[in-house]
Length: 99
Image (cartoon, rainbow, N blue to C red):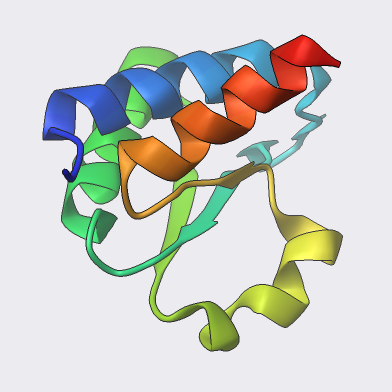
């Protein structure tokens, strides 16, 4: 089951807000939050990014396409990686809580 746009919006807002304090500010303004993930939730993530920017002034760059299109760039520039469905991220969270 795919997540709802509101779920993705909450996820982006919470994740980005938690890292906003570490986001450097230059003369041009704050550095963008960079989010990568599959194309399915892309439109919802773009809407969430626009809402986050409106609320905080911090720009958001969403890359939503097949993994092979962005996987090499993740280690150097990803702030957020979003899943295509809630299930994988929920299972990952449950497993990480056990350790």
